[in-house]
Length: 254
Image: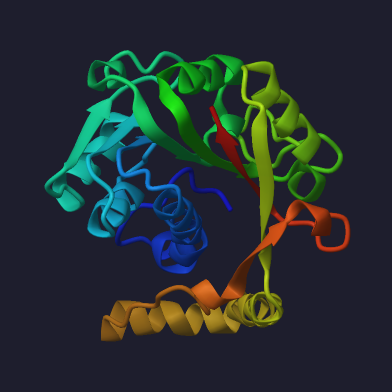
């Protein structure tokens, strides 16, 4: 995949939205379980996850991101009551600090982008109130870059479960639980079918036919067999060896 973030109206949005909102659902379940309503969404992107949390009872939610274009989309498409978007750097989060300590911080697919991941995690630890929750995700390097070489141009480093656990411990978290996001049998089957369909669609005659339909008939084509929520499941750390997840999720309590 060659995109950096999900943007509404794109094929990537249609194809991968379920993959990403699944993690916000995971976070929401745990926030409700621990009665944490105030949320900082660090590196919120275009803000769909922040809006999802507000619409499901979290308030207030502060979404921060360093990318101005992403925040323009957030303020245009995803603004709600009890939701504020701010331009801020995750290494320092100076603007977010004006809201005081948070009951919870969520941050998905952030750590791997940061030149100074420890600075970000230290800020998270300092900005949480006592017993506050940090819920984050990052690609599982054992699956996505087993040779140590990431295929994503914007990733500084991808982490193994052990490395992520060690980073969280290093900044002061002691109550840490790891989970994984893995594909279900349905998700694996859908992946295989999608791969075959993409092979067919890449055939020169198929490409020419699609071009003709777009140019002459004005027909548009969406994503090929988009991912669905049922394609994913959350697994505990003890199953990582038998069913390696493609994403690691951590819940750390201050």
